[in-house]
Structure formats: structure tokens, C-alpha cells
Amino acid sequence: VERNTLSRSRSKADEARAKMVRISVLNDALRNMVNAERKGKRQVLIRPSSKVVVKFLQVMLKNGYINEFVLVDDHRAGKIVVSLNGRLNKCGVISPRYDFSHHEVESWVGRLLPSRLFGKIVVTTSSGIMDHEEARRKKVGGKVLGFFY
Image (cartoon, rainbow, N blue to C red; front, side, top):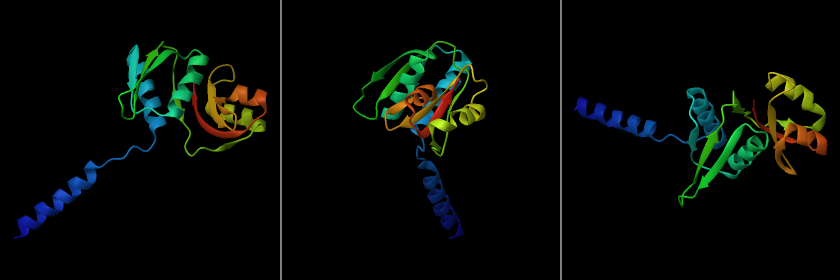
């Protein structure tokens, strides 16, 4: 009788462990890109896709940290194939998304980037998702999404 109750409780524990949820799609995408870059891969498949991931990749593309990316529509969450160029050292997500004003740009750059000369902080503003330099030029604030260098 005891053996039966033990096996029943074990199956419930296995069931609870099997249901993992994805917390941050952007964090998973950036982590996949950094890992592929460190292994020397030329391409990486990111799934699932989201509008925020696409906008983040557009900022990276504009600054020359990736070559190109292609959206693959699989009638589900979507996939993105990113072509890497070897320039990406590290990228990450800042969670929680802290408030950011255009006056505080220098303090955020000092905290997140290794140097003022290279790397970008990606922010989401009322004018869209952009890097910190564009936000400073437009004099808009918002929330810090992440960084790359």
C-alpha cells in the first residue's frame, strides 16, 4: 500500500516539473545569440519571435552588430534566422525595465557598457524602440530594455 502512494506522489512532482514557462522571450533570444557567437557560428535560429525582439534586432542591425535577419512565419509564434558577423561580444536584457530619462543617459552608459565609445543601450520610448544616443538626440525618456556591445 505504501509503495502505491509513493509512486503517485512522485508522478505529481514529475508533472509539476515538466511544465516550464518561458519568462522572457527577449532574454532567451539574446542569450541564444551570445552563445552562438561564442561558439563561432555564422547563423542562429531564434524562436519564438515577438515584435520587441524584431525591433531590438533592427537596432543591432542599424549599428552593424549583426549582418541580417529573416523572419520565418510558421503560423505559430514565428522564428527568426539571424546572420552573425562576429562583432557581438555580449548582449543582455535589463529586468525589471527601469525608468530612463534623457538626463540619466551617462549614468546608465557607465553602469552597463564597458566604454563610452562602443556599445548601445536599447530603450523603449513613446517614439518607439531605439538606442540611447537617438533617445538623447530626440530628448525622450522611457524604459531600459537591454544592451549590446
